[in-house]
Length: 227
Image 1 (cartoon, helix red, strand yellow):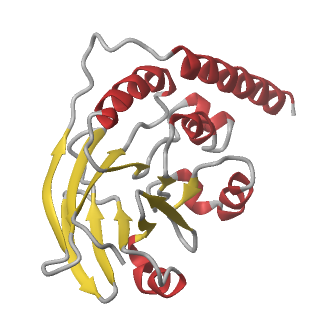
Image 2 (cartoon, helix red, strand yellow; image 1 turned 180 degrees about the vertical axis):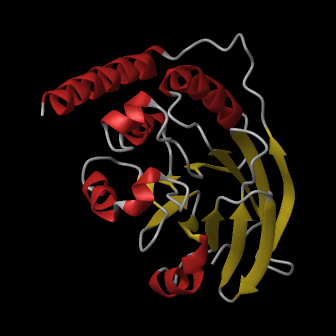
Image 3 (cartoon, one colour; image 1 turned 30 degrees about the vertical axis):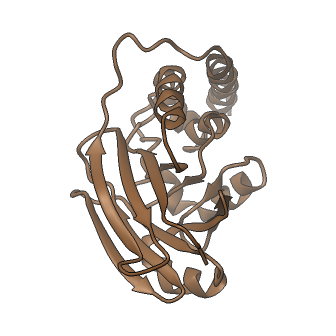
């Protein structure tokens, strides 16, 4: 259990829809934002990182974006009913063995410890099950991608529960929370959309990752066309 009041900032992306060229600039921006946090910083993708209309998603069955994003320091990827991968859980299972970022979707959950705080990132529909599997978690965050941004707080001793819907307002957002060892235990301080400035420079390392993933996707597409 936490012994002192702790600030938690949850940064999130949503509905990137296969825009892999955006990732190097997005990484630079998120790094700057997270460096300014006083407290615990988390980063999750809420869903729809890929979309059927994006060629790189079609060529890789929806996996390319998550492979590229794996190098950006995400704590968890959420996969919901709007995601192509939702219909192919066997591919999600295979990805779990190939990338570092954990999934907070279906039966999967991410377990994180930051500054002595135990945090679980889980599917919003599986919070009760995840609570039983993560009994030492100070904070349990259930993720959902819905049309309206909401954050519902519930306290379940010894855990603090938060059910978070990111909404459709922006591809980048931030949710700030306060954890306390005494009532009210968990408070939502703010939730807001963030804007990526046009002049944000691309990160060279992520640019290299993107180039590699795109090259592999083109090879996969060519092999598929020859079949």
